[in-house]
Amino acid sequence: MFQARIYVTLKTGILDPQGKAVKGALATLGYGKVEDVRVGKYLVLTLDYPDRFLAEKDVKEMCDRLLANPVIEDYTFELQEVAK
Amino acid sequence: MFQARIYVTLKTGILDPQGKAVKGALATLGYGKVEDVRVGKYLVLTLDYPDRFLAEKDVKEMCDRLLANPVIEDYTFELQEVAK
Picture: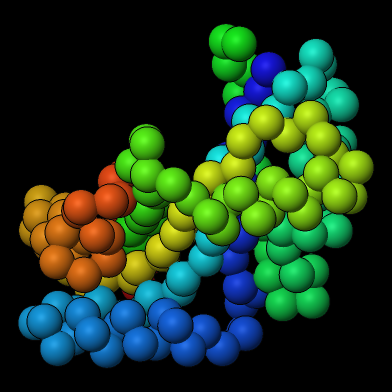
């Protein structure tokens, strides 16, 4: 049994309107020293896989095929063994 | 100058329809051994703050006031000093 924590972020150079909106809202609240905000996704998957090698291979595939858009997004992930 | 990486997740027990939809889509693609999917937000803030104590205090405030909904969401964050 594994837990995968996946971080999906926009590639550098891709405009982030949601981040810009958050930055503006923070400035309105008095946090004008926030210079940049980037908003991404954080996914936690619980996987009923017997071994780490297979889990890692499949999580990579899931990211490439569904969870991230490889044209505009990057991703990283961590795998951790958890108790059943 | 600091970089804050903020992870916002739904509290345990709060229904996650987006996660359920992702789980269903993964099953359709052949990844039926994914037992659970939770979808959260991942924010990266660049802060022009001179010291860590103040940065930490303000990031906590920003999370409580704007970035997370304390009724249904939990958050954690990491602060890292970065070059200007």
